[in-house]
Structure formats: C-alpha cells, structure tokens
Image (cartoon, rainbow, N blue to C red; front, side, top):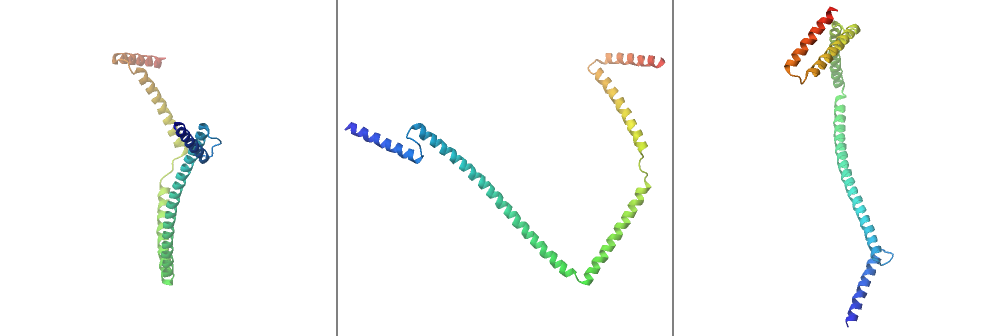
Length: 181
C-alpha cells in the first residue's frame, strides 16, 4: 500500500511537472529547461511592463498637450471674435478718420523725438581712433606697472618686516645708483 501511495504521489508530481512544461512551452520537462523558459517569460513580462509604463507616460503627455492645444484654440477663437467685432464697428468713416488722426499725431510726436535725439547726438563729439589708441597705450603701461608691483609683492610675501625694509632700502639705493649711470 505504501508503494501504491508513493507511485501515485510520483505520478501526480510528474503530471504537474508536465503541465508546467506545457504552460511555459519548455522543450522538455527538465528543471533547467523549465527555469530558462520561466526566466525568458519574466524578462518578457518586465519588457512589457516597461513598454506599458512608457505608453502611460506618453498618454499623459498627449492628454496634457491636447488640453493645452484646446485651451489655445479657445483663446484664439475668442480673440478672433473680438477682433472681428472691433473691425466691424470701427470700419465706419468717422472711426477710420479718428484712427487716421491719432496715427498722424503719434507719427508727428515720434518724428519730433527723433529730430531732438539727432540734434543731441550731433552736439556730443564722438571719440576718435587716436584717442582710443592713446587710451589703449595708457592701459597697457598701467598693466605693466601692475605686473611689476604684483611681482614685488609676491617676492616679499612671507618675509619678516625687517627683511622687507632692508631689501626695500637696498633696491632703492640700487635704483638710485642705476639712475646715476
């Protein structure tokens, strides 16, 4: 009886194993074949989930773009209606004449401002190339002086004040000596 029970249990397990192999389309009922098919199905499920997430994101973007476009369409329609109603109401000869006079007044004001600005710009003499070149030379000389001073400062950094004073006196006497030559 024990053998019969064991055989029935083995037969049940074999039947379950064959059903699993059929479900995952395994080539045989070996553990390796079934697990490789399950891994492949898991990979495919992950890819499908990733595609589903991408599609959901794209759908949300499209819905947002559609809402934005419909809002813009609504605004354009409103603006179009307002402009058409203003155009229809202002096409009367009196309305056109008022617009023409307003434009003429504005043009005269702008012309006066332009003339005034032209006079002001003529009053101020522009800078010449010679002046620019002289300024450039002055700046170059100042930059050279600044480089020399930075080099001196860098040379004296870290020395005690007594050494700096004595070196400064030495340099001063040397410069005076060079000036005599």
